[in-house]
Image 1: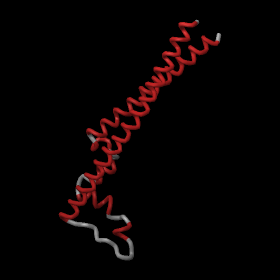
Image 2: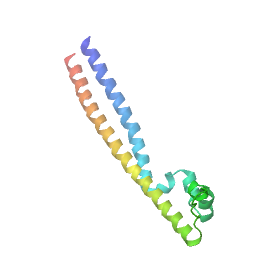
Image 3: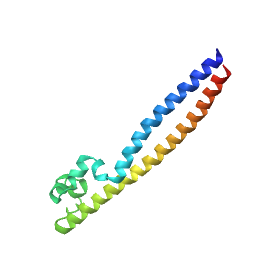
Image 4: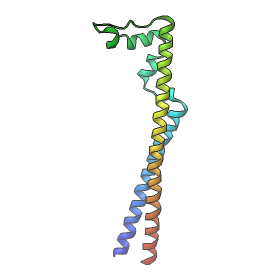
Length: 132
């Protein structure tokens, strides 16, 4: 009876590690999309706020550094506004890609642990089956 339980346990662990692997693999694929097309995966509000100077101004002109009572910074205009908007947008895209690379590394670690746990328990189930 113990050997039957051991095999059931080992196969159950194999099932759950496989399930975890599949889910993690799907999330890793999303990270690949984030790396290859960060404009697609950034939040819509960030995307919309950086599509034109007017949209950028509408989204950012109410920030405290521009509206505080003591030493407010004047909101940029003209070429300076365009340059700031484009610079911030490039930074957002780089940040999205960096975050995705970190996510892939995390998911690769999880998948490696899944593979090790699966292999160990698959062999354990095979041994339990052979001994019963």
